[in-house]
Image (cartoon, rainbow, N blue to C red; front, side, top):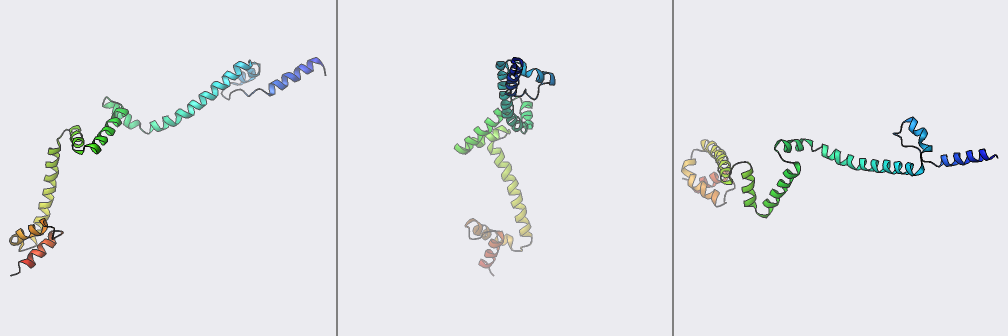
Length: 176
């Protein structure tokens, strides 16, 4: 084996041991890769590995964040951040658990009414529906007005579970 062939074999062996050029390299850059100093090749491969790892790490976060894009946009329109909005909700939930009265006061304040205003509205709707149901029930019971005090008594004391049962008990109690 001649010295030049021996040198060519050593070069061939050292070239075989070189890691391939990064896939993103152009064909011309890949051809020059073997001639690039080992220290430079090592640094390029290290950087590529770190960049891939960083990209993979942040792709997961980016995908997760993309699911929240509508909420980010909504917060932006209100001049705040999603983090601030969520922090506010967590504080409110903690407050509701620790002091429900104070938490409800803050919650209703956030929507622009007081707890008392809400209760009046809620009870007003509930009372309207109860009044409507009682009026409908009374329309088909000829002695309803006559028995109303006893009906109320049976309901208030829990001896009757509903209006129909209270009416029935009142009728039996007041048989003529």
